[in-house]
Image (cartoon, rainbow, N blue to C red; front, side):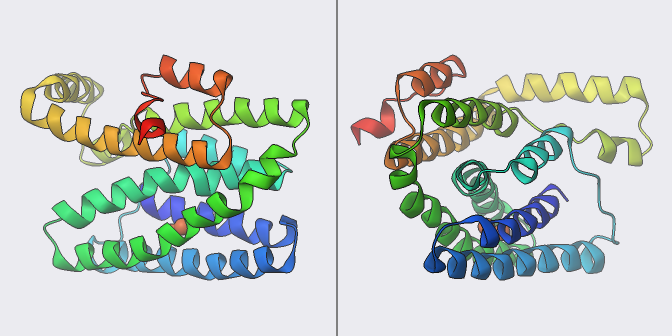
Length: 237
Ligand SMILES: [Fe+2]
Ligand SMILES: [Fe+2]
């Protein structure tokens, strides 16, 4: 459900970007991304309808907040950083994990096809942002850095599927017990390794993308280190 909401948010953000990005080539690209994201939203919603009894859970707080920022901001470079540099990096890590671990071969196939489009979308930010970021005023750069910090916090802090547990009839006490158990499992050995690999891959991609577009500076590196992101790994590679 959260991936479906993300795809719908991406479709809306890209439709705004068609109007906002400078130059016809960028507009043509954004128009193709609107179509891609509509296809992704359609296939995920059909999967939930046909294979999961049509149960669609509401957006978690973090994802809603992130898309409210992205959709509500009036600057194209902020939308592009939020959507194509950060949110899609996170989505790609999730789709890849699902593609490798889902038990349903249909779902694995859907993820594989979506991933082929997503790498193109991330590519747009890498190509379009460096010149723009180099030319930003000090005020705009500051705003972009602040937004990056907010967006990273929202993307990196986990999503607890409270509504799904409530729908299964669990009480508040049960749900609290699950939250505790999840914490303990996350610290346990096997799952911890899985999480560590997932996080490391995502962190490295974020750091290397930020470096490519010129957004990795002293200020952003400092707050990323505070979040536990190693900012030197990708820079050295
Ligand atoms: Fe997508
Ligand atoms: Fe995308």
